[in-house]
Image (cartoon, rainbow, N blue to C red; front, side, top):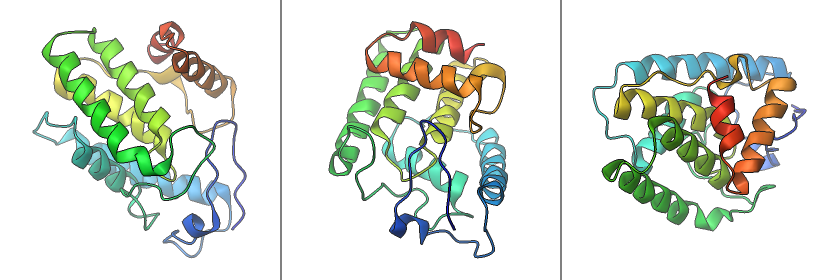
Length: 194
């Protein structure tokens, strides 16, 4: 299957594409549909969680697996290839642990408002890019779970429409992430509640 990638999407290599579980998929639309079905199941699962112990590597991987395990063999496993990003794949676990440790400190010392905590966590998780695919969707759900489980706060609206489609809202989202790369979170904080 040949996949066309939107701006800001991470291309899959041949070995990663071989990890596709459903053999009948021939189009990007079919893949998107099956991934969305799997993600919806993960959202239902996450709503029933009784724990707020979600800021750890084990949960981060478990959530990704819940979101994509019906579609990809490698769901919940760290990528093993270099992507069009700065973080080398051999550094993923170290950077994720640092993010989790930082987030635990943010929570302990009330460093940020709930919105800024979740937005910063989301940005860093996307920046680390731990998985071969689905990092943005995974990081958005993680941010929403942080708001719900740690702060009993309302989840983000994320621009009010799908960010998986190539549209104006996705462009605004990518722009906000790039500004956050430069340590300016103002646009991202505005975007997540728009």
